[in-house]
Image (cartoon, rainbow, N blue to C red; front, side):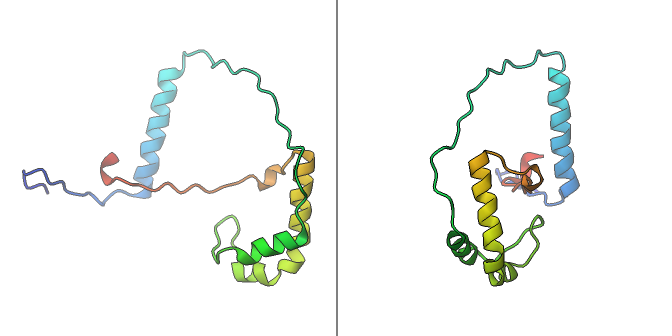
Length: 126
């Protein structure tokens, strides 16, 4: 509780569901306020090609794997120590994937995933 002298109390009772509902409500409000708006004018943009690059080598990939921090995430739950231990087996595939992606300008959709974890910097935003 505040003491009347400008101090603020911090409410730590917010849950992940509260956080998600806050943003869901905000999105719904924006959508309802813009439902009658005309679509934005999106000018055509020229496509930039990556035509000057050096292919990565298996050795490059092995160095990167072995220099990586020992962490994992939900998208890649394999322990880093195991990836590092098997780097000589994995590096040729990863190097080929990178080089083909750069040469073709295409990256497989099945590998385009991310987990974004928002960090709440101020407790009083809700």
